[in-house]
Image (cartoon, helix red, strand yellow):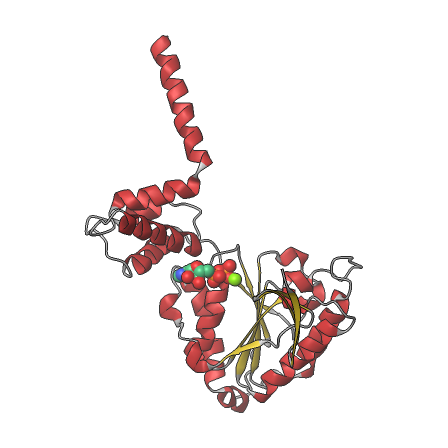
Length: 302
Ligand SMILES: Nc1ncnc2c1ncn2[C@@H]1O[C@H](COP(=O)(O)OP(=O)(O)O)[C@@H](O)[C@H]1O
Ligand SMILES: [Mg+2]
């Protein structure tokens, strides 16, 4: 095994052979240019209410001047709240795709630091870059990993400085400067309350697990991408998948398509979808079966 350190303008990468196993400095926030964000609201399914709530932001990003002229004040920060896999990241990307603005994608964990002041510096760099590209979106995924309550914390010893920097950056630009900061979390109660004050993440959009109609919509969307039997009824699939997120449904349809391909089937049938769903339920379903057979045996003995 050969360990090498590679110096680059972005920092030091630690490699084993040709595999990168870590970095001492963190790469710059990755900027996805407008042409790279192809996602639109068409791709975001089963959350009409959330889409409606963010429509105004798209409108604003398309033409910030219009809002300034009329004296309208848009939020600086939008917090997307919901369980994992419900499409928060997807929605944020779709806002950028609809408005055709640069999308700066970062994750709270990227602001972890090994050196004092590094997270804070990264936040500053990010906002500097964004200001030069406004109108644009800064997206901070899983903000709870850095934005939890400011306590002394041995895992994230310098997180307080990072949050302070984030707060100061958000206070430092005006509402109509053309930057919208979107953050996502599934643990809003853990967030530092200072982040939620007016002028910061003061708009909250809930992205819940999809209801029955939402699941039908999501099944229809992902089924349309595969070759499937005309006998498949998305409503039945939706009824049998209570509690599934958009990511679960996408995964289920994909698993069914893969299995059908392995079997050289000409199309994906309901049986493949059932099988893929049952695999997700896994143990709980086998227990139902065991429960049932025990019950049947008792019944036949009696
Ligand atoms: N509402 C949805 N409509 C369509 N696809 C979805 C939806 N929710 C999740 N997905 C699919 O699952 C993937 C992961 O979802 P993601 O946006 O990362 O969820 P979150 O950020 O809430 O954890 C998405 O890229 C998309 O392919
Ligand atoms: Mg996400």
